[in-house]
Length: 221
Image 1 (cartoon, rainbow, N blue to C red):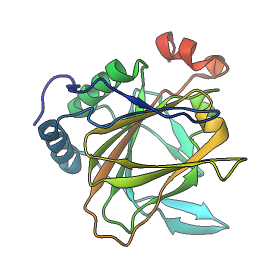
Image 2 (image 1 turned 120 degrees about the vertical axis):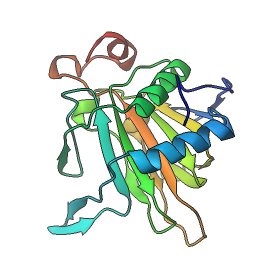
Image 3 (image 1 turned 135 degrees about the horizontal axis):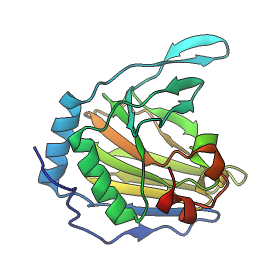
């Protein structure tokens, strides 16, 4: 199992020229061996759950397994469900430290998704809940099978970006991305293995939710 802080073998990020967005991708934020180790540790060490959400008055199972970890009090509500955080595991704390060092932001919580095969996916959405504040920064680590990640502008729907997120990569969405873009992880009929995705974020107290991300990400819970 990997130990210590998340190693960062590649500090070179690809920046995408997107209007109304700040999107960076580190294709090799982790070495293959480290990514393999973290995947194995999280696959067996996380308390994975299958949730239900309410869609048009009907309860439906979410097509993936999820888990929510974070600092005490990092309560998060999305898709009509409120989540109380489980305490950080040593593995998650180590990954968080590396992600913070590479992205330049701090995070107090992480949403984990386990996509078991191509039948699991995530529909179009933005991470724009009030708890995330005005311009949230979302840092997304991918482990396991490579999957297609899609971005689409809310108003100009012909403006799109499709990315392949490989094993050990880090994607960071900041600025006004969540205001103007939605994103998805489409289902696929192709044979694909399991994928674990960790999306680190900073949940804010009510008094600091209106602050810009560059300010609040440094000092505030």
